Amino acid sequence: MKGVKFILTGILFGIVMAKSEAISWYRIQEMFRFQSFHMYGIIGTAVILGMLAVYLIKKTKLRNIQGQPIVLHDKDKSWSRYLIGGSIFGLGWALTGACPGPMFVNIGYGYWAMIIVVLGALSGTYLYGIIKNKLPH
Image (cartoon, rainbow, N blue to C red; front, side, top):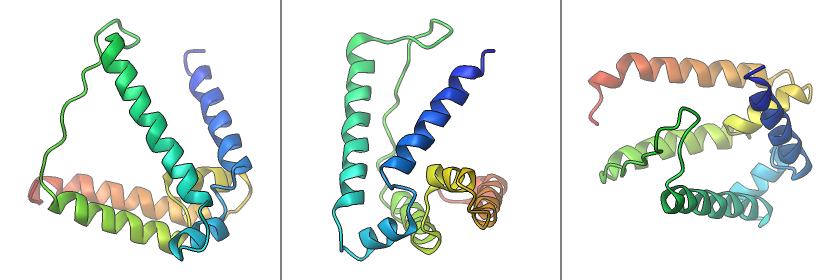
């Protein structure tokens, strides 16, 4: 029963992604071709909500489910890691037409080809886990 809230949140996330057309390959391609503001509006809304959530967590000294304070550490200031990682992520997003959230929503919608994309994403994550100690962080 502890996991029900996470399942319900995932279902709600999937519904919002589908209704906002954020899972649409065509919408994503429009974004990368600068033909439509639709996806930029969705991403901008997510960024603003994320900023608001972080502000509220810090301001109200919110605690996690175990009662411990939530601590948000500052990010490393190096540019190369974000430039390289963001480029790889962006290329994968542009080639597949989906980022991690919509990949699973598309599978739920019955687009079975997305299983290949999910397996590729999981393989890349696993490979990173294997070689991360050898990479310049």
